[in-house]
Length: 295
Image (cartoon, rainbow, N blue to C red; front, side):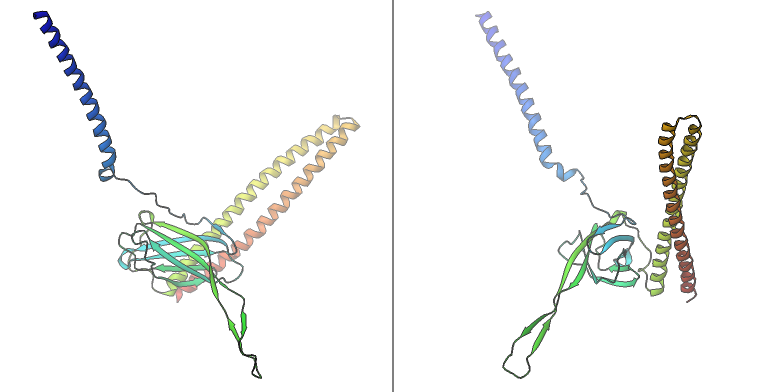
């Protein structure tokens, strides 16, 4: 009886230990699943917000390139000024619209406060204090061909009614993240002169950048020309020790090198002409800036 009782107690204790282990495992899985369901309440997650980089041209169909030159947020005025450069051959009837992430179902009022030679300064008003992100859409107004409706053919003079319908074609969207947007002081620029100076400064910056790019291009072209000239000189020296068949092949290579040098000279001349034109434009922009300041 004693041995049998001990054996029964051992079996009971074993079952109790195994039951305890299973309980711990089930509790572990339950807590893990519960934490997964409730993680969104205490784990901070940020949605990815797009932010269009300035001075990077965006290619669009029909209008050419669109470049965001500047954006400044004025908290006290609840306004955002967007400076956009449109590379176009002629005047395009543009329109703009804006929506903020804080109120995605409400279109914000927009106003073109300044326009000059492809530059548009557009002000977005009534922004929320925490607008988070902004989508700024650009459209091109297209005027359809006239259609004539003849309604009365019984009278001596027919009546023609011309109808014009305007349509919009979407161009692109410029995105702004509030955390990455530069803040301005006061209630934004007010005078036309201020916007003229702003656009003039941006244009000067673009012209200076182009002048530097042409300077770098000329340096690279000149380096390649020197390398080709050196290779051609080596081919000419080798001709002294070559037979007639070898000389014919070398002369062909030398001719190709001469063509490459001529091409480099033409490229350098083109870059120099473009650079001179830009330097003249920069001079005119400096004069314009002085005139604006004197007003």
